Length: 66
Image (tube, rainbow, N blue to C red; front, side, top):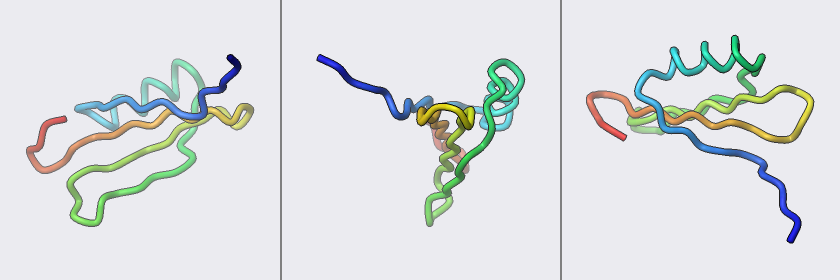
């Protein structure tokens, strides 16, 4: 069986800290950001501009836990 990962999701408590880590450690860049209409969470997709793979970070907001 042949397959390809196009994106992985990582739930994080500190979105800014996670973004900073992946920018510095792997050279990833933010490619897309989406926030829930009710503001309960934010999705940030990061990629390397070379492969189709995207790393997706999701962070809960306003006292919620993941």
